[in-house]
Length: 50
Image (tube, rainbow, N blue to C red; front, side, top):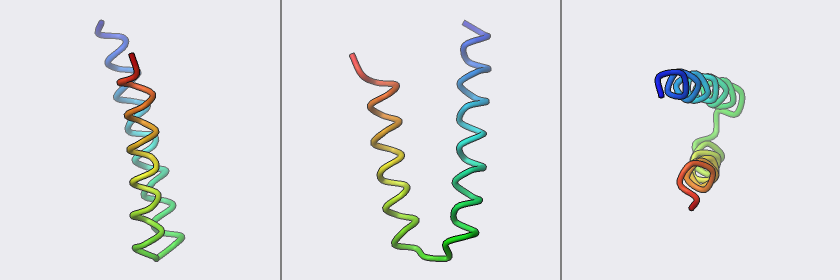
């Protein structure tokens, strides 16, 4: 269980960093909000799918 949590935390940290990099490049709040919504939906479907 502990190894799985370390992998999930690493995965999340990686994609937070990628998101920050995208926001530095785009400088557009609308694009950022759309990306956030799409990634939240994708993450929810990947981790909470039964």
